[in-house]
Image 1 (tube, rainbow, N blue to C red):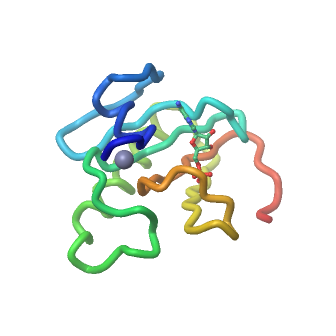
Image 2: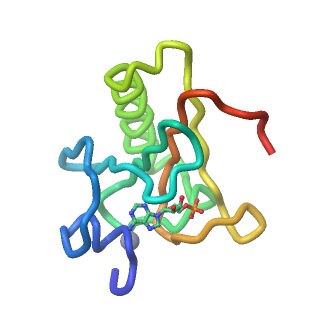
Length: 112
Ligand code: AMP
Ligand code: ZN
């Protein structure tokens, strides 16, 4: 999608620190980390703007995203656990309207 920063990252039009990529998803470090480990996992296709639009039709993709997150958490040494956040809409502070999941690890504070 034109003017979507995450679509541009997928296409390599703007730089990112990628950790993982397959046919369906890309994972890269968040440019403004909110935790000691802060990675974004996104579907390559601009299929949904936020988690609010997820339906059963996307079940396999969402399960795959959570599998990738668990694999990355292992690789990043997050043995004590991690948090997955997805912001949906302005009240949640969503700024990029391309479905994405924040993988947060390290010393985490309480949830807002
Ligand atoms: P959200 O507020 O849930 O929409 O999250 C969007 C996230 O994208 C924020 O945590 C930003 O720091 C992050 N972000 C924005 N631009 C970039 C970029 N070029 N590379 C990596 N992360 C980015
Ligand atoms: Zn996009």
